[in-house]
Structure formats: structure tokens, C-alpha cells
Image (cartoon, rainbow, N blue to C red; front, top):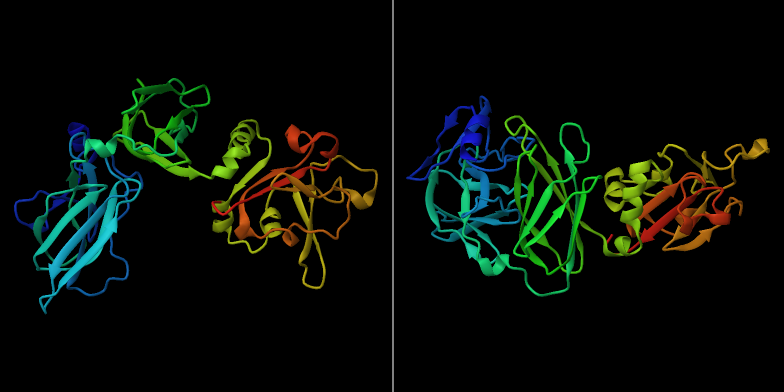
Length: 398
């Protein structure tokens, strides 16, 4: 792995810390250094390490990776700490956590002053190091932690799940027959024809998950399985590790959505282009004040609003059954609306009922939009499915 890394990082080295500790900054352009790994994974976006808003020339920072010392696996969620004595002799501390790539950025550190730095993960702590940083951009420093095997072994609590998909990063196509090995449980899976896999009934804790395929670069990743939840881990593999590093994306699934089949319908719907599936994160990014505001942006959906403030809005589907009435040219007066499995608005009931009167965006965990009878699954279709359906799931964990 070290030899591969040397091929990737053909850049200029800049040494900035005093002492006997190795570190490097790989410069992409003059004055804009970026930190990358000595060994193992490199974040694909190669973000520049800059302390935003830090204008004091006497302040600087640290940036780098935190890894497990034996197998050099990156550790997301590790804490990095710096301690020093200020001019009055009082002890000061700065701390931060690593992101999903095991990368950290710790700003607000004094330059030309002795600092004691170390990293911690779970019950394990790295050996403290004394460093002095010169003024300027953050200095590069990678930490290694000997993670206790007792912590790596899962702790007995309510079981969780791990699900995900493996795709080719260049083409986006699913990768079939990739081997996934979950260390500590001696479990192995092969990704199916859609690139999907799952591990069920896992005791919560930290595991090592390895993904191997003859045609791709191997990934070896630490994952933290939550209690009584499902962790979604999606891998994007590359056949040419020199050009692109593997990418790992994780997310914790909402328990209520999973119990009600939201994710299964989403996976099938995305495969056969049936339905639109909206998560709470989608609503947050759109910053929509009303549910109907967001739905009006979807293809095949029309929103009709009445009232003095245009705040009484109903949904019509362009994919509904055709009507001989010119007035109902979109197929139906409105769509069926379900909230937590209960139909609260019926098709052709009239324009007096609006989704916004029943639920707000902050209450929503997920939305399923079916724009016509050909898209609707059986539980939301049948004899009441000709006008399409909007299925809303609420929940505090959404």
C-alpha cells in the first residue's frame, strides 16, 4: 500500500513542525497546501486544509489522518486534542473530531509555542507528542492509535444491521460478486446482481469491513454499528487506484421507515423507475417551508393553490388516468394522500383539503410519490389508485 501511495503523491513536500516527527504537506498550488495520507485512503475531493476566518497571523492549526496502528485503517469519529499553557500559565485545550474519511482539521492553535497533541478513540489514546508549529497554514500530522481488541469486539446490546450497495465509481454500475468480510463475526457476503449486500443481527460496536474484488482496489474500513438501527454503507470502487481512491458513504437508516418498507420500495423503485422517494435530508437541503412547495418541483406533479395567501394547495398527477372533462385534464381532481399508512385525503374529494394542513416538513421522515396507477405498489393502489398517491411517514428520528 505504501508503494501505491508513493505513485499517487507526486507532489512537493513541505516540512513545518519541529522535532523528530515525520509529517508532510502536499502542495497543489503555492500558498494552498493540502493534507493527504502517508498510507491508506485519500479523500477523493482532496480538500484544501484552511482555517476559515482565522486572521490572526500568530494562530495556526493541524490537519491530517487518524488511523488504527496495526492495519493502518482510517478511524472516523476519533478525537484530536491539543494542550498548551497560555501567557498567564493557565492550561488551554482545543479539540475536534475526524470526519468520515478519518481526516481532521484543528484550528486556533498558537504558533512557536510548545503543544502537547494526541488522538483518542473509544477507550484508546495515542501517545502524547510535544510539537511546535510555525506560523502559516495548518501543519500536517497523522496519528496512529492502538485500538483495544476488546472494543473492536461488539458489545452486547440490541442488534443492528448493515446494508449497502457496491458500485463502479467510473460507470456507476453495480458491482456483482464482490466479497465482503466482517471481521470479529467471521461473516462473509457476496454482493448480488444489483451490487447490494446485508449483514443482519449484529451486536452494536466497531467492526472491520473489508470489500474485495479481483477487478478493483480493496477497501478495509472501520464501521460503527448502532444499537437497534441499520447502518447503510455504500462503496464506490475504482479499478485504477492511482487515479481515484475508493469512496465510502455511510448513513443510519430511520427505524420507522425501515419497518414500514420505505427503503425496500425505494431500492426497487429506483431500479425500475417507479415513484419518487424523498428523505428528511432532501427536505432540509431544499429548505422548503411547506410540503407542497417541495412536491411542486417534481416532474409529473402539479400543485394547485387557492386562498388569499395561496396557502391551500392540492396535488394533481400528470400520470393519472385521462379524463373526458377538459376541466380535469390532469387526470384527477387530486391524489390520494396517506400519512403513516392512513389515507387522509381521497381522490376527487375536492380542493378543500391540503397536505400542509396535516403535516409540516419538520415532522417528516420520508415521502413516497407515485404519479399514476402503474407506479403504485399494491398497499397504496388497488381500486383507489387511479389518481396516484403521496405517502408520508413521520417520526422524531426522521
